[in-house]
Length: 89
Image (tube, rainbow, N blue to C red; front, top):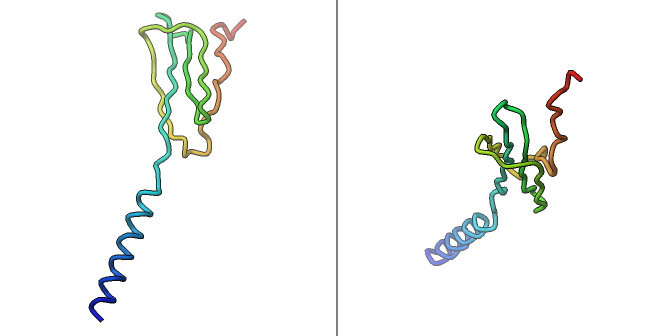
């Protein structure tokens, strides 16, 4: 009887360890927005969850990093449209 509990316990432990090892957390990604000295966005870099790298503009020392998880169903896959620096015309 003790041997049966030992085998069952061992199997349960092995199953729990396998299930933990099989789960991988969603990848973390970041979007970097670059701004000029006036606060106007002049560049952008993004590595999407699908592995596609997108960038435009220039890199500056003034930037903001936006993090997100690829497990999020609303994770961005491409760059947002460029911001018009003169929306008033």
